[in-house]
Image 1 (cartoon, one colour):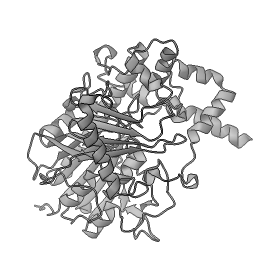
Image 2: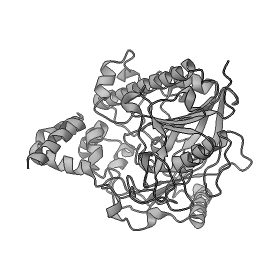
Image 3: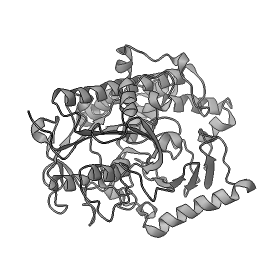
Image 4: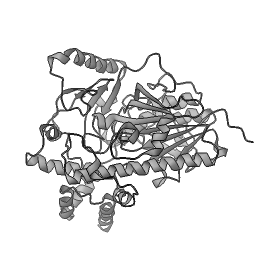
Length: 482
């Protein structure tokens, strides 16, 4: 009989663009039996927050264990030709030194799950020295008993906005009923918005099924008991106030850790956790000492000095520049908007393709048919400061910053903001080097559609997703012909 290796295997599952929208977190109408079971037999973290609300900065902090604004990785898809400055290294470098096989993706999931998407110079496979070699992983697509001990990172992209959403919904055995959902009050309650929300929950159910496929594979290969599972979202849901914003639905992440061999079963942990804490947790589980530069904390065991707050940031995303910061504690969220003369609805080209609710509510706003809360998203400017009681007001409907009775709270939250900035240099406050940033391709496509296919723009305005891939092919074809 084979004996299990002493070091645990680690399966790190990243689900894209979702907040705490699982059944085990209380989301209505959705069924997530696999993740429910993982939470029931592991630890479900109730207060995990992203240090950024966009994918590549968030993934950059998770693979290094350092806040993205400290390592100059805060701008979406930036610095891809610039090595990480010393002493920072990806956690896979430490894992390899400890004898781990590092694996990216898995053939069992949609698209192969091989997304890396980090904001520093890297390659998928190969050695790493951070100077001439920038490989992060050893192999792709599957884990085998021969790979043990292994670290496998798998991205589940079905929850990311994409042209596959309609197909996933049409084939669902449990198609979520639009009448059974509960919309947050900052959404207008319309048929199209309800259908879009239901379609999103269908993707979550499919994603849950994919987690099951990965676990079944571990079972079949006799590796489940010695494998720690870490499941987390990379950022919040792609919708109003979600991905790209510093509110609850943009920052609050699902996080479940399941380790049959060691972790207490069925615990709901209320500690404040930052997204990059998964890096320290992975190294700790592998028995690797944490580098001194990490801002991450391992969450495997109780911390004598638990976090008082999580510092989050939103910076460049494609063509839209923001400099917003958030402090989240157990009870409050403080937001500091350093750029105020810009609406939350910045007409970001990428979002024009993928947010039906945005188009529907934009039209309703023009007709003065939104509530005051709903209309704030379309205001010409943002307040310089915001303060919310996220326990009693989880939808962040009332800004408390100017109320005298919250002056002490505001002072404390502002103090945390100043504390963080006194300790670290925030690269997001420096001028942007546009040469190091990926051009906003979606803006080129949108402008082409406005000129060549205005009927498609009209469809968007009606809340119909036209199919990004379809028109992307047409756009590329037109460029080649010219």
